[in-house]
Amino acid sequence: MAQGSTRISKALTNLTINYTNGKMIAGEVLSDIAVKSESDQYYVFSSDRQLPITNRANGSLANMVTWEVSTSTYNLTEHSLKDVITERDLNNAESQLQLRKVTIENLMEKIMLRQEYEAHKVLFTTTTFSSNATLTSATSMRYVTTTSAPIQQVLSATSVILRDSGEMPNKMVTSFHGFSSLKENQNLHERLKYVQKSVMTKEILASLFDVESFHVGSASYNSAKEGQDRVAANVWGNDLLVGYFNPSPGLRSRTAASTFRQKTFGSPMRVKNWKEDDIDGEYIEVNSMYQVKPIATSCAYLFKTAFL
Image (cartoon, rainbow, N blue to C red):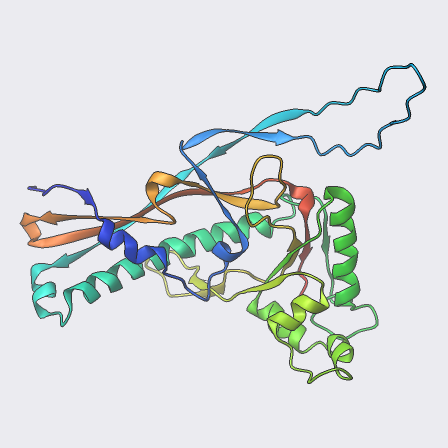
């Protein structure tokens, strides 16, 4: 097959930089850590906060304290998809740039959906965060019962995070199902009815739960195997996570989780294109290389089946 030269298109890559999809929240919750290598080690500083003995008697030596560091690893995976635009497609299009733009956005959405799914698997798994609770129908945040107390439950989780990590949670993450359940929870409306209209928004929920932002994932996917009838499923399920996610993670800083991303594969993606004479068309390929990884797991608390 005769193939033209493959090149990274700066102009087409620029189309990916500001693209967002409001249904997907992985990029809002998880900050990127730009790395050079596909796999490497990174430093993990000890979180020991033992109260030191600082008293010093006259003429004696000061007590010595030091810091400890270990290492952990990341391993990135390349995610790539391509599509083809034939010369006839281009000739029939009202705008060739628009046709390329729609093609790129379609490829991006599919890679973003994969990242969303992987972020959910990392963040909403009890083996990721040792601080977690599985709620029952009696304690579920979905129902108004004497044992359902969403604010008290989240503030209790906040206390655990603050005690174990020293960080104050700044984000909450749930699905649209979780969001709609909290919007209808009368225990929350009771807190508002004397101070303002009882219209529950993400901003008001963040204020009630004492976090900076409340993130609602509404992405869905087809969970059926290829070739079978479509089975629609929500990515984010029935759980809720409260945690501290550092907006600028760096050396000696803590964050519950982040996305390690290779810089040469774009921020967040890059676009390649090349001509194929055999099909009289142009291939467009979108690439990204990343790993969604938990880092300081004491910085988050997970409520499983919070909206059962």
